[in-house]
Amino acid sequence: MHAYKTGKRTPQYSLEFKVKAVLWSHEPHRSVKEVAEVLDILPFILSRWCRECRDGE
View (cartoon, rainbow, N blue to C red):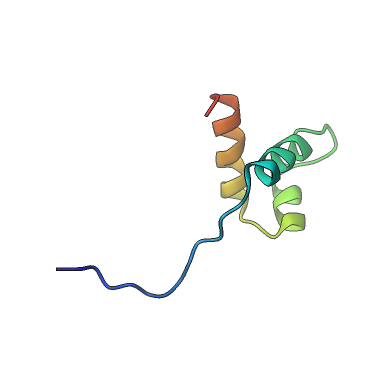
């Protein structure tokens, strides 16, 4: 049996966008929360991108 779909779609971000967001969040005077708010993404998503970048994914 097929799962029901809600019609919601998760936004897809380019690798370039993710890398720029991670680099921006690593600047000394910026926080993950602040960068996430400016980019209109959830802080946990940016944190995940930072972890993936650190782990080389």
